Amino acid sequence: MDFIFVEELRVKAWVGIYAREKAAPQTVEIHLTFGVPDAAAEHDDIATTIDYAKVVERIRAELAERHFNLLETLGEFVVHLLLDDFGAPWVKIRIAKLGVMSGVRRVGIVIQRGRDGSTPPDVPL
Image 1 (cartoon, rainbow, N blue to C red):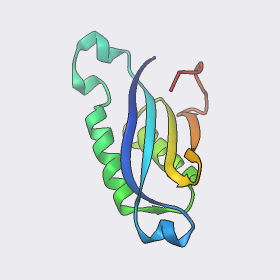
Image 2: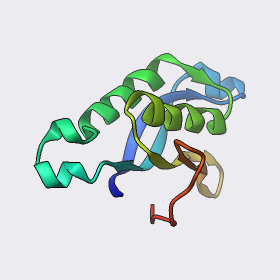
Image 3: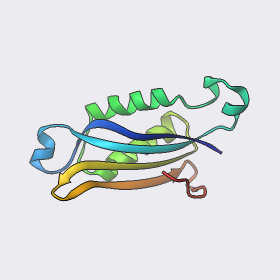
Image 4: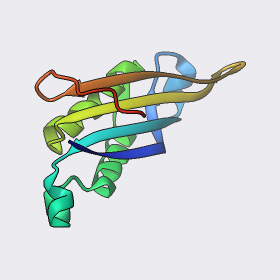
């Protein structure tokens, strides 16, 4: 399986349970790795792979419109977007809130899922 990665994607998202987090969107940083068909490299055709520009556009659009109480729920939403809507066989995502606590640079989650419940060997994120 081949992989596409998107690193340090910064997105405005409505996420959090505290009043300050519900008052305005906050920036989250997303690192995303997802499987693509091996045929993409063989055929050199965008139609045989997952267009990362469309993935990024969709993530930005969806997160601008929805509110999530938990970062975990936001992460699961993005994972299922890749698995169900884009057809990725496998997804690994790391999402972090930036500067939400004094003296802490990032607070976040990591999720790894395969469409059939399997997980391939660890892929660096």
